[in-house]
Image 1 (cartoon, rainbow, N blue to C red):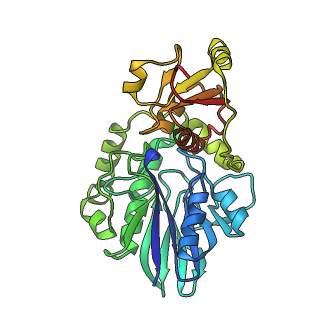
Image 2: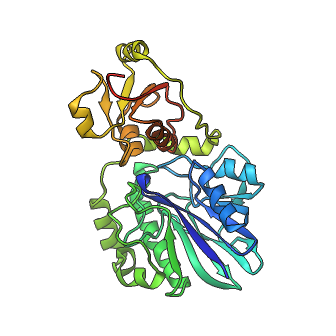
Image 3: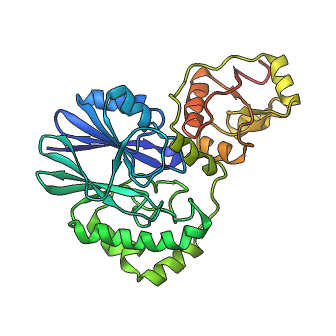
Length: 342
């Protein structure tokens, strides 16, 4: 029997997947902090033999390259994606073995990006799950405007065709397992629900119930703002992200914090807004550690500007550091723990 474990990154509205059989597994669209993935595989007692990317991501830094390096897994990346590292270039129809009787079949589903590829998990030749990345989401599709403005309408039409391609070739009971859509800005509209199947999407997803012209018109009219940091994610993922470093940042004293503020750097207070309102370091900015810290801090900070983190506790600091690393803010310039008076 196959299994599928969900690895949720709630703050970014994304999911990664560990799927396999009794001995071996595939990881689809892994997060930057791959220690979570390795721990999940250890709990299952399986080897990671395949790491698969549905596309070059625009909203987070992938951990796929490093995960494949550490585990020796084959690293699948769509053939149309231009990347600077060695990988297995996957084309439509390619089949990758995972475990005995368990295979992963690539299905070209352009739309979210020109090279987007979904993966269908097949057990004994029967499709049981579809990892749809940013193609067919729960009740919607991935947005088509993140690559190049001149391609947006073309990609919107491709999304409609790709959704139909999946629905036409898969049975109603096949699980739909998207990467985006749980609060992610990569979703074209708000996605609803936690679980879905091809049958459920066939009955309600606009991409499958509307004609192409109506779908494209309404999709393009409903697109919202794109987080500014998205512009930096695809280049990092195409070049090949550096290994993640979550070692504790250097502690800063009051004088250093004052110097950094005077230099125009960002000093970010991670406490609740209530605590911040009651008292804070003058000049610091409040981004609560609880919530979508990475999305909103990365959206607003001038990219590349040093950031110093002020946290109530060492645990809050470590959690924030992990969150920010997921979107490419790798190393805080410094940090401090305690109250503003401390």
